[in-house]
Image (spheres, rainbow, N blue to C red):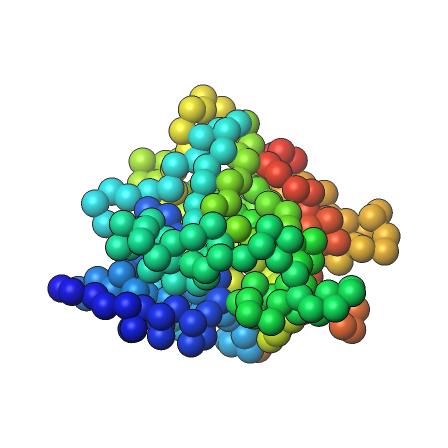
Length: 285
């Protein structure tokens, strides 16, 4: 099928947000497993004021209808790193069109290295609303979580553990995350992973959760993950931060929220919620 530039631009900018694109993701090519769409932006859609059944694993977007194919799975090298592409549309990544419409930035456009909103201090980015930021320093941070359940119906908030945090993201398209060295092998059917983001202002106070099949490599560890606990807002008192294995942040939904913040404050995958940048090495029993 011949894809042309006008529909690409339309889908890429009409309601742009951000997700992590990589082989092994659910919803590659959109939610319809029988209609591959290299111009899909379905996984980037935010989750806001939904029931738990709707927001959990992006069920409301239909992404679970299109699981990874051909054995695709995100490889997580224990003690190493893995790289994904943060973008507003699959067409703006190397997964589509041989990367023709990809740039150093998630929107496929060119921006200065010190990209920032107008004013001093900077206002929100005027042509980058999907980034929910004033500049790189205000990008709230993104994270990955893992569950050792191969059957995704058995994944819960308690067994889905945040294992890596990348501060001041989303920002550039290429994003590299660190993996804890003691992460054990996945069961034969693989693990479930999620990419997570809660923006800090500059738009609707929503959240993001994208689904992946994943597996751990380069490991002989027999350690087990601890049960994940809800994180706690601790910007003003670090003694309140939850130590050890933490759950994803569920916030501003109709039901299923697991965090509370002061009025006007957003939770995020950063030190304000007890998440140190890098591999989360304290998540084990």
